[in-house]
Length: 370
Ligand code: MG
Image (tube, rainbow, N blue to C red):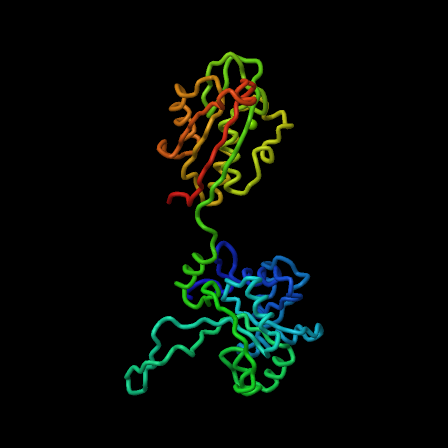
């Protein structure tokens, strides 16, 4: 893995690799306890990483893999569990479904493990330097977690003579390969083991959320006293004004909500409560800028925005370009990525009766440009 912290503490998809498996196990209703086996000197560090302590126990690892698993089993002894799953923290793609599949397969078996078939051709390199083709149809790549009936596993460990490649091997040795009933469940690409530095980049792509997020927003303000309305940052002369929160810019309120929605950060009212007099008459640029900054903190940026203003009057068309320019500037986005459209509602409803103005907005967030 090269320089840096031990691989189980390296971040994948924004959190330490170890936490992916612990969190997935705790999220599975069939799991009562999780034992995290760690080097003794890492105990305090790992305790600090863990999401909760109640259902987690820590045990100290040993020199060999078998010693570490034995230590984990000992830490569970007082609970006398019916089944135990042994998992490698270097496989962060664990899900509760994987665990449930294994436990279902364990009914009527001594052990169960996820397995993948091979798609590449397999060759054996002989001592003589020659390649020989190995039939691959009966070969399987075994992943973890591996699930065991506890009594089977304890017996296997009692009889374990030497270090094994995995825990299934101990069961095969203890029961005899012909007698051990080992069930296989479907393996998954996401359960890949992180061994080399380049595996991290693959896991990152498999486990990270997609880099794009969409959001939509909607807002309405009623007409009231006044001689202009503010829409998308532009003051437009009109026979009436708009009532409400701040400068009542329905266009930018819808846009702010769309951005917050894409980021899953609540809505404009959460960030700027209407009850707070601070925001009375305030420019909606404050709200929009706040949302943009929150998005930047996530390492994202607005890719494009599309706003629709709904009213009979004032006419929007003469002001559309000014609105696009003001909005693009506020977002820090190219003008070509900002659209402002307008529609009437054919004189229907409260908009048709000219009681107010509505706006809707859609945005796409993507990775911030480098
Ligand atoms: Mg509003």
